[in-house]
Length: 299
Ligand SMILES: [Zn+2]
Image (cartoon, rainbow, N blue to C red):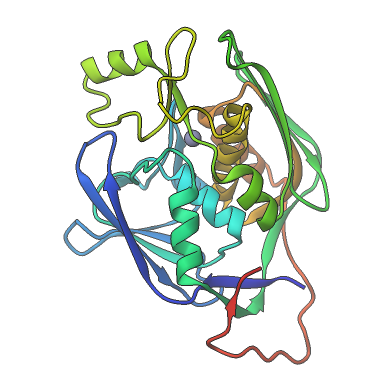
């Protein structure tokens, strides 16, 4: 039996936005069962909200963003990855700006804050999506395939003609412990010349070696080096965990992602959702359920 969870108390964190170079605060607040994940632009008049739903998600070349046509919140993927990885079903996220801070480029800051808040188990069974039949989508650069499965398994493959990357593969079987130990620390990465070009064009206003792994033609420029030799492909799994959670519920499927990015992930998930290939399921209800209100869970 898996029950829904939220956090036990509110927590906040603050960091620099790489698109705006502004300091942006975000707050996490507990929500009751069946409310889902709700984002709020707390910096705008009347604090408009966007519930996490695949119809409000846009996959761009370098990030995943939420938009309902009026308001936007960019760079949601690493935060959603942490929520998916740790199994947070219901949460209000107040964002005082138009993007989620990148922090160190991994999910570690979000994971630490959520664990600091503690978990609260809620008196409702967790709902998930079951995949009804296999599905593939390609876009000329990459391919993503979904197979029905009883659990979530991600197989990711990337290839870059860089001496430190090359061809990397990773298999992840979803479990909060595995997510914490194997995936949550993996940082995003970028190439120095591309990052400089984006800064010149004004696409990126912030960002430094503390927000990502930065590579030149041969080396990692960050003085601390890599956190693991295959940190690059682990980050691809981290991104996928975030993008998959834009469905609002965890998906039970075996996902094979080859050379794929946010745009393809989100397009494929929209197709799955709108083609009726997902069935919402929950475990059968208990006849008697008692959960102490203040109980904290550590997995
Ligand atoms: Zn990423």
